[in-house]
Length: 187
Image (cartoon, rainbow, N blue to C red; front, side, top):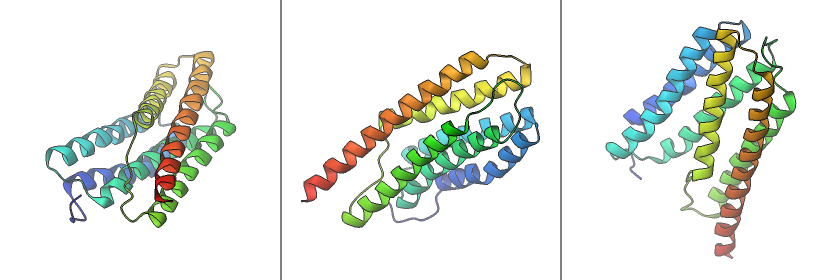
């Protein structure tokens, strides 16, 4: 990884974080189109920052930590705003928000512990972790579509919530096993 602190790809990541309060505010006040557009822009910055980092060889330690943090903040803020709002198409369950928040907090704590134990520890996304993020992004866009179009797909949305919970749990287990294996190799 390069020693540069702020790169073009990091600027896109910071922009994603910057958009979060505006998306949350729009959700809470029922501005579905506004929030959806901002969410899609934020999701696009996730793709752009990764592509730029690879294309321009701008992989930095700061970016490696900020990118997944920006993803977590974006997704969990949306879920929290949805759960705090009376939605016409679904009641976002608080247990879902809490379970995903605990999972993300445990991953951050695990990464911190890994960093403390092993100086060369690097945050590395897994295929299952990327799949979890992808499913959550699609789910939020689908939820916005239901809100904008007035669709009542509550049964399907609840099935999506359970699928996301299962995939997020599997992703957590995958990261935990990988982290424990790395720690075991240090002993």
